[in-house]
Structures are given as C-alpha cells and as structure tokens.
Image (cartoon, rainbow, N blue to C red):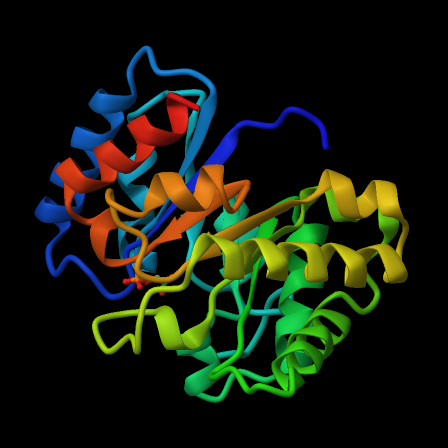
Length: 255
Ligand code: PGA
C-alpha cells in the first residue's frame, strides 16, 4: 500500500445542539492541528453546521458530511445533493452508516449515493458491518454482499477515492455488546481486501484505505492502528470530546 496518512474521522452524528458549540469544538480541533503533519482529519458535522470550516484553512483538516442524496437536483424535499455538499467544501461523505441502514437505507440506495458522491468528486466513506457474528462465518457473506452491492458500477480508477469503514454494529455506540479486538479488525481487513481484489485487482485492493469504527477511544485507538493495521479510525462519541479526540489524533501521528 502507498504510504498514505492515517485518516481520523469524526462522526458527530446529531450533535452538538447549537451552532456555537459546533464552532467551539471545530475551532479547538483546528488549533490543535496547527503544525501537525502526517495525518488527515475529517470532521463530519450535521448538515446545518457544514459552514464551520469556512474561515479555517488547514491542509490536514477536511470537511465531511454524514449523508448525501443520490439525485442531482429537483423535487426531493429534505434531501441534499452531492454537488451542494461539494460547493460547501465537503471532501468526504459517510455512506451506509449502520444507523442510517436502521432507518431504512438499502444497499441499492447506498450504491447510488456512492456513485453520485464520486461523480461530484467527494470521497465516500463506505460503511459495512454485521449486526452479529456467528460461529459458521455467515457474517462474512453478509459483508461480502454489502461490498458487492455498494461498489456496483464503481470504476477501478475511482476506487482510490473510496474509503471502506468496517464498523461491526455490535461494537458501536453506548449500547455496544463489547469492543472489537484489533485481531478481529485485521481479519476483516484481509477479507475486505480479498473481496475488492476479486472485484478489481490486487493493486486496487492494496491502495484503498480500510478503516475501523466502533467505540474507538484513546485507550484502544493505538491497538487498532498498530496491531490491527487500520488505515484510519471512524470515531463517534469521543470525537466531540476535544481532549479525547486530540489524544486519538496524537496516537496516529506518533506512528
Ligand atoms: P462510536 O460510534 O464511536 O460512538 O461507537 C462510531 C460510529 O457510529 O461511527
């Protein structure tokens, strides 16, 4: 794999509740990142707070959104297009997060969202993950199916812009069953690479970033990056805590 920076992504979900708090968290992270190198940080705030990056110029701090609609424009009440996001300076978009799948997001729509993001030159962070693991390994075919559906029609040349986030649903959020282990991630990374290599080729599989998400915190972040060889992390709860999120960034810079 090319020597890419680790990608540390903040998924703010439906937080914080005020514009002021969003600005405070964002500017604190931005000033923490001054003079930092060898890491790429992506903040994914809720849509109304996408303006927060406007005044801040920093090469390693990027803006992401938590969703996108797949149509280009028109009568789609409540939806936001990829070109609107691009116009706001959005470089990444989370697609297929399990919390959106729970709200009815289908594999087909996820695929259309990935395609429309790529067309608008936004890098999709494509989330896959099983709800539970079984001893027979059926969860692997589940992940394979998510990947096959999601990547349908994505050209080989576009794959370098796709980030795949493995987020086991059982390890996400405050109701998590338990934390995943770096070894579990590493095995899944190999499996995802194999699926991508079968769909495209080995070089394509080696060049994409495969990151981990699910209860990432300052105590486990390093083990996922080092032992698990994660190319980055998708952080939920701890991304709104400036101290903890800065610690996670520092661990990845130190690698
Ligand atoms: P968590 O969320 O870090 O709070 O588990 C991760 C995610 O949902 O992306």
